[in-house]
Image 1 (cartoon, one colour):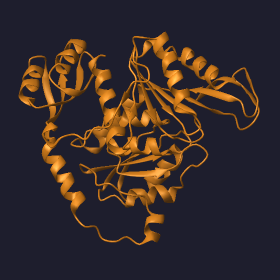
Image 2 (cartoon, rainbow, N blue to C red):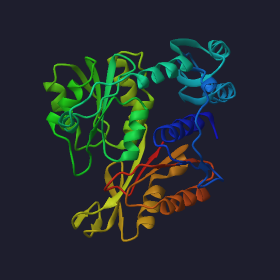
Image 3 (spheres, rainbow, N blue to C red):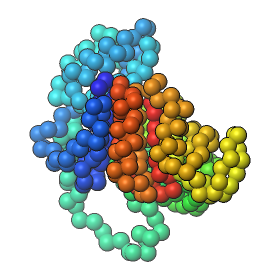
Image 4 (cartoon, rainbow, N blue to C red):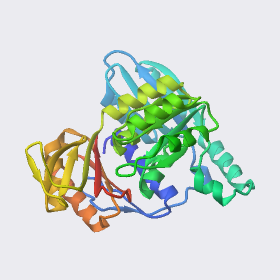
Length: 365
């Protein structure tokens, strides 16, 4: 497993192990269906969260990725020959920063003591909370305190996906997506409920982008819409977010990250139609690649495999499969086994999204 894959792997592992309270199903080549049981981290296991950019000419991305992976965990090293973004957890930040300075010029350096953050979190959890009237709970979405001065709002549907977005720093989740687009009022309520004046809004569905932009214009806060069209694009955008960067910088970073993601969505046709040379019957399984209808058929597995082959997944390093509420774990495991058998060089991860309507949402990067 390369360092970039390992970093993303650990992020998703931690998301579900910590927040869901259930075992996480995560697979890697040769280990389809391997299960990682939840474990409670010991207090002394928290080290430093280290983030920075390396800039230069002819930067050796793979060499840097492998070196940093050997010095820490939760590693994410992405970029090109001129700019590389690094995220790593380690007990020895000096060693990592020293190595990085030998490769190029560092900027946006962040070193956070995760043990202190953990203790602060425990303190907040222990503080008594003012009672909330049930009617207020019904009207307003839950708000998590942003880490910086930029709040994040995401449109998400599905308990598993909601937990993923929350764990990646989303302050407010607005329920919505395919067939249940949120209203402008709902988005404005989410924005106004944040304690920050700067907000990034992730619609995560092409049908929600216009509504999000209308809410942006009406709001009296500084709101930027990062026009994510799919859930995987939204997750990729969140991974690029730096809570110490300003609003514009984060929006630019997140939009570029989202653009790198390929998305497969498998659902059922709600009506008969002829499009892109396909004759689709109502109720058939259909496969969309980056929002474009490319496959249709009566068998879920056949349609899913056909779209993945059309996408040419051999070109990508990490494949993440989010299975929906109409798919069993066994079916999802079978799909992952097929992918790993045909493409043993890819990292394949399986996450229970519990999303309605979409049997599978699959990302490739």
